[in-house]
Length: 417
Ligand code: AMP
Ligand code: MG
Image (tube, rainbow, N blue to C red; front, side, top):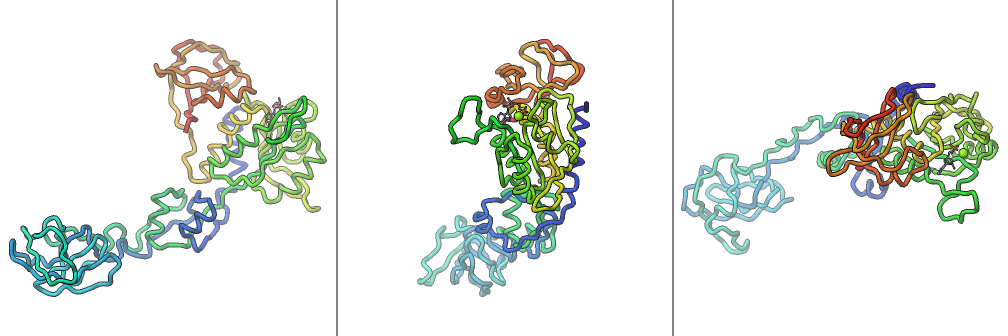
């Protein structure tokens, strides 16, 4: 028997070697390359510094006129020079002239301020082909509407630290700095095996006594939410020889093997039969659902060689498997992939009384009603996956509690996002 905290620690220890794995260095990282790969979930293994100033040159913040402030006298007309578009090279501004300039265009040498087009007389640009003059109402301050070189990021600035998961703004700032070679943490590859002779993959007809595999789907999605890579989700028969063949074929590339089913005390417990004495410890965790658990460095043979891979074995009932994932694996995988590890959690009063096995940490499913009270959905049965699917909360009733009354506070984890 082990406590929830002890098993959480065991999972953390098993996956600890992944924290310091060699990074993967990727070059040619561009938006189109990312779009092609379809995977932008990345965590930096090394910091990113900007090799350039951002902006790289002084440029205009407005559509307007680039001017020498010393030349501006309110109401006195000045000659209009050729316009400067975004993307133009660096020009010079002749004394006693002003240049139409567009947002993002480089400030010409000699100019020291921008006057927005709205403050010009007339407040519109003349056609470029016709000689023209323009006057202004006021003398601008030196530097007005000029975006200085390096004002966002001076060259050499640390843009992002190691360990940062990249979201849109982080990817954008990397792109703006022109950095295309990055060191990423390696995401964890997971092999998901649903064990059970009764299981069929979706699409196949059910014979009497058979059910569809729910765990493969829910765990594949749960793993994806942790930015783990799921390359294969397979149904495995309750047959040691068949399961060994699956491991030989698919085990070698996996960083982690995640199984469901076959760990209880019944007959035909294929995961237990395969790995008891082969690196995996099978134990009872004081949690309901999700009591029977297996964990360890599993030994198996592939291509005539002995291999070892971290293996985590959850019980087969779909609610048990998913609650096990939430409590044991999700926080560790999320942290490894640079994501917030914990579900948002708070305490709220129960809408109704409940009973709980005193010696176990019970996890129920529920939602908040209009009064902000926790309403349970479905009973404690660990086959009630549809009730789970309707829930927005995991409701935690700790060890030592056998009964709670309506109005008693419980800890809830928000699982709705
Ligand atoms: P086990 O842990 O293998 O004893 O399975 C416990 C219960 O969960 C049994 O009723 C199984 O039929 C069911 N079960 C096991 N694996 C799955 C799965 N992948 N999808 C849906 N139900 C499952
Ligand atoms: Mg089974």
